[in-house]
Length: 349
Image 1 (cartoon, one colour):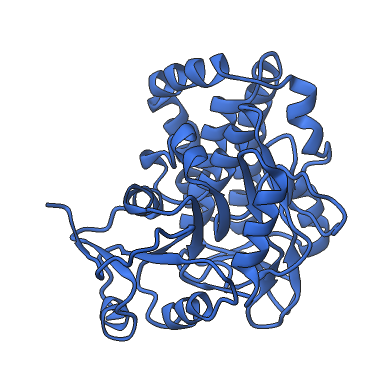
Image 2 (cartoon, helix red, strand yellow):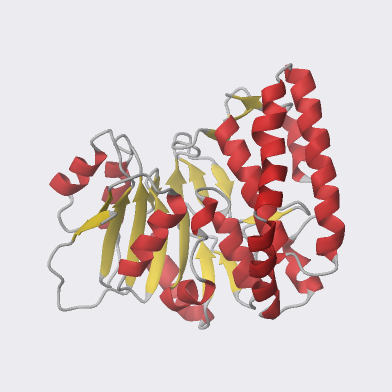
């Protein structure tokens, strides 16, 4: 058995929402996360499911000791963020699922706000909340738009509802929509799985929307490291995070981009990856950067080409919207150029 489940006795009321929290070595943050969930000001039942991904820091004991009403799925080996969430969704009994990072904390009215908006929309939709920096309280985004190469562009316009994606750190959707989309791809591991799910939902004709009220606080990059701008106005990330991000964004592009833009963007994307990697390696005087991030991305696309081709065929066959509608939440200017102008070269650690 690859994992074991420790579940409390189930009450008579079926939960409206299943809050699913993927945890790996989150001893420093898991209590704040769970406290924010159990302190929700809402008038409907919900359940809390925690998947511990073979943590070694004692965080599993925190859950068992202090949060007995949470269902705990304990993995015997580290399986990654995607499988963790897929397992929790399989155990979820709620009409809705809320995916929540272990380094995130909900504002008190988050669940009630999400449920109210889901009922207002009526049909299946993915919803997100404003995201705030945990330490400073600064607004990070209200969902994201995308550039042509699927780099997320933070949306700060509170009047905008439709977005390209919402963060997987706090992502709400009906259980039926999760099942329709097939959950996260197991083989992604971590990162860009939210981009995949939102892109697939939009391609299938479902809304991806963000709310202007309530929100959640987030320690961005707490687990994988980096992916945020520091107080010195520097973009700090890790080689592991950048490598997974570039690879998985490329996978999403190969799967969901409609024809004929797929045939135009993919070759350009690969050329720019090579140029970016070579330039960064020369400036940083570190050839390993090119190999570990950019070459490995290109190699993964080639190695997975058969799987990507077959999955793309099935995804595109179900496409319910046109190319113009799909790209209506995109901006033309590559976001990396904007970030380079604002923050300089990223600091890779």
